[in-house]
Length: 264
Length: 299
Image (cartoon, rainbow over all chains, first blue to last red; front, side, top):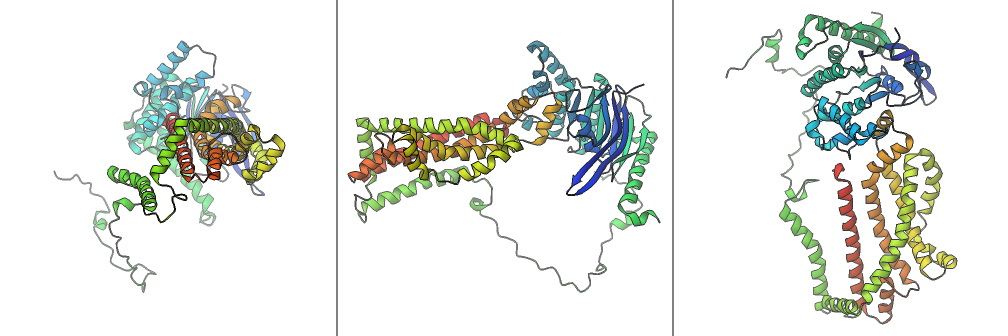
């Protein structure tokens, strides 16, 4: 079966002064339609660069990224992006933020309003539709960003540490929320996070990256029921998956950052 | 209520205080202590709001003190009335000029020049500044030349403008234009450069084309800042117009000052200065109001 999104041998090099630094090395990844995949890794593993390349905002140095078989050459609404924070249009109300992508399409007002209404209801924002972003909490702002990306009906939704700036309680509520939205919309989601617990809770599959250069060291299938609530975070299967992934990241980091210790 | 407690392995350790001097810190003198700062007086605490009453008192004093000094100085007759006329004399000179209609026609003539010269400058500098701020190519091609031109004093252009455009209106309008267009371009470009890159990137992922990103993201985000730039440069325009009118005019507030000087009518000069000040403040307030309406989302 072919995936919606495929990465083959993707490499990214940066030029730092006169040196070339490899940020991502020979990465292969495939997402099937409707899948929820999380990417975890220590800082410096190129997680955000990876999403930026898939979004088409950063060019690949080698390899190929395809969406439905078509090579990715630039950004577009078929790959919605939700960054960590602060990407709402501050002068637009909630509903007009959600409508941004739809305003660019030849839709009549009724059709656009119907779609905006649906996504506002789905993300629990109907009561805040006339609020400005600065009047919202961090969690509500991220809901708007997710609704705005989903309204364009992307083939893949790219989440770049979307909960990274939130407090712990809000973060857990948002995890449940994202899981629910994924089930309701059938979206294909690729999410980058440094929070292993979050990755296991949300993903059907977790991709583990190592740093210097960023490369894939493992893919872990999350064999947990599709219906998940926060209590699942205490189930033994969950805990051992989490421990397994954390150990992978930790062992990789130790050998990478302290070369002398690796031989001991 | 009895607190809930969990018995842990390290329970005994947490209550123990460390009394030993840590390894490598023997022989260190105690860290010097500074006296605690006294309670900061509430009126002079850095960036802290002050009471309403205090704010109003200070605001009124800011205008009342110079006015009182003026009244006292002219009443004491230390300075001759022909150098420093009394406020009453200035007021009556102003009323007389207003009654004869010359004040209004002068104000209109001056305002028209500002509107033309500065209006033209805004019309050109705002698109130019957006181009310069949005595109590094625009910056590379414009910044060197505009950065140089802005340092040439506008008043130094007066003789040249008169040679080129004659003594009439065009040279005066051109002076205003030259005096404000470069600053407004650079300030607009600075504002445009503050549009977050992430906002531009996310707009592309929502399907926007480049011209839509400019129109629907860069411009609305920059608008309050552009109005601020216009407000600052409007003050400069108001300065230049009087300078322009000092040379060969037949109407305008600057012309009225030169006329009054010829007959040593300092009371009239003062009256015109008051009018210039009030008109400037009025423009400033109007632009502030516009800015706070347009930029309601920003604060």
